[in-house]
Every structure is written in C-alpha cells, then in structure tokens.
Length: 264
Ligand code: FES
Image 1 (cartoon, rainbow, N blue to C red):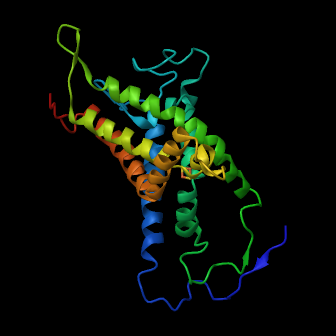
Image 2: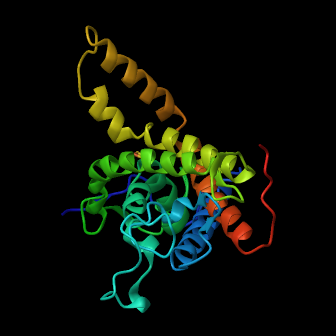
Image 3: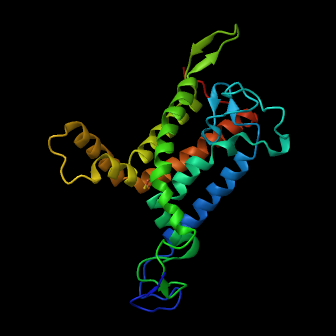
C-alpha cells in the first residue's frame, strides 16, 4: 500500500497550541493502562470474583469454574489447573469489542502511540498509512464483535437480577438489595447504554437506509441508538469505570476488607 505524505510537516510534539492539549492523551494513557493491568490481573484470579449473590462482570458468564454460578460445573478433569482461568474463556469477546470500538481507537491511538497526539501537533511519523496494514485492518472485526457484545447485556442483567436474591439462614432465597446489587445494576445500565450506542449497530439499525419514513419501529430504534451514540465516549469511559469498580467492590467484600451495605 502507498503512504500519503502529511500536508504539514512538524517535528514530533511541535505545535503552536498553547492549551493543555497533552492532558487528554495522557489521561487516556493512564486510565486505559490502569484498566488493562487491573483487568488482566483480575482475569487471572480464580477466586474473589463472587460474594453472596454478587458476581463480577469481568468473569461473567462463568462457563466452567469453582463457583455455583458456573454453567457447566467445575473444571473438567482433563484441563490442567495451571491453564485454567475462567475469565479468559469469555473476556476476549467483550475485550475485542472495546478494543476495536471507534471511540477507543481514536483515544488510544492518541494516548498510546501519539498518532496523532492531538490536532495540530507534530506526529512521530511523516506519512499516513491508514488502517489497512496488518494488524490495524483487524479493527474491522468490530462489526461482528458487536453482535457478541449485545448477547452479553442480558447475561449481565441476569447476574444483576441474581444479586437481588439472598440465601437466608434457613437456606431459603429471599429478595434483598445490597450496595453491591445497586453497583451491578448501574454497571449493566451503563454497559447497555455504551453497547446500544455503537456506531456499527446504528448503521445496521437504520444508518444504511436512505430514508426511514414508513418504518416507525426502525425509526424509533434508530433515534434511540443515535441518542446514545451522541454520548458514546462518555458511556465508554463510564462503563469501563463501573466494570472495574464492580469487580473491585465484590473482591473487597470477598476478601473481608469491607462489609457490604444491605439496604433492604
Ligand atoms: S463504535 Fe464504540 S462500541 Fe461500536
């Protein structure tokens, strides 16, 4: 593929801007790095991701595993314990969805490899190669990862629903609300808002059509998706935060570092 020369050549970091242009990419670098490091660490833990009826969204759904949430029971005998991390069986799918999201791409291209660091700021390279070379063209998988990500919303909702059912002393399940239940529901709401505001979904729902008149259901879905799409960056960051915070809260309860507040 041929590379197009950039119209204005500046040295890396050179700019006439006098504002704090470096702050957003630096914040992205710090926040995304923290999320990646914590998320990887958490995914490699085979305990502490459940407490009472709470279940960490990093590990949901648990296909095989040591807890009562596991769909297919405990780890199969033939699976070496050293290679068994329940979260790693499912985390790549929502991970790919976020990694290839248009918002995240724009943010981490700036934050992680300064490409560009900000508008009107010199880049570390003098040509533009686009997203066609390997591995960037893999970002096109986003439109397919979206379908899988949508499936995760009812799964997260189901876990949030289960967080409302507590076992009493006599072994009977009773309705109850703890602070962890509220945190899990907030995470579901923000993650759903982020997922249903996806640019690819918006295209599939109605963006590819020239006109939506005469199709009221499609038009209403498109309008809802567009509304969420307008807040996509905010929802992406907020849901990333609540995803990690939910895991941290449940883990701290499981470790006995904090006591869950039972509201009802
Ligand atoms: S563009 Fe961000 S989730 Fe699809």
